[in-house]
Amino acid sequence: MSWSQARIRAPADDGVYPPPWVWEFPFRSDRLCLDFASTLGSRRSLKLERLHAPSDFKRWVRQAGLGELQRVSKSGLARAVRLREAIHGLATGEAQDQQAAIGSLNRAAVPSPLVAQLDASGHESKWLPAADVDQVLSTIARDAIDLLSSPLRTRIRECAGADCTILFLDTSRPGTRRWCAMEVCGNQAKSAGLRAKREADRATQTPRPAKQASA
Image (tube, rainbow, N blue to C red; front, side, top):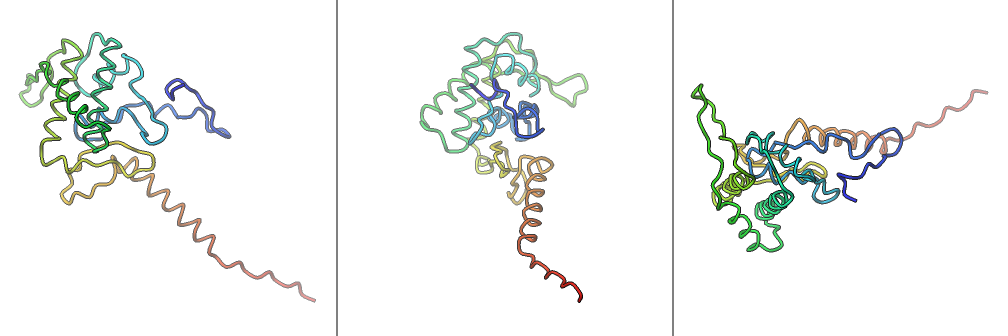
């Protein structure tokens, strides 16, 4: 049973585990293709699959600002997941079969992508409605090809947060960004460090001698 199907009770009164918020799509990568790669979370432990059903992919497309897909089939979802894994494997250098991953990425980029249009204000862009899933996948694949074939590929990072495997593009000037989001994983790491320091300080404190009772 997958984590998207299981409702596991945590100890004490912690409620349902994993908590509901883990199924929300993270958009912290500063790049479309990396946001898409992060729809599978906690890759080294829980493997939180956020694209469990075609409706999940439709929701991601909408939240990513790519418009509204009218229909997503199971085969369309399978193609999306295959593209996602190819992008992640190539971005991290962890692809089990690099040539197969490259082939999947290149094939996904063949169909016509979504078409961007300038809106009435002249300052914002919008996408023309997608005809089908393959237009969306082509747009994602082309973004990945553009990133992986540019010098920016050396700025792809994996979040240093505990059990966070979100990929992001480090656009900081020194190239030392560690967290997908400071207010999320950065603050969690800071809090964990402070707790560990307090516990270490308590462990090294010399116990005070007991007072002797007066005669």
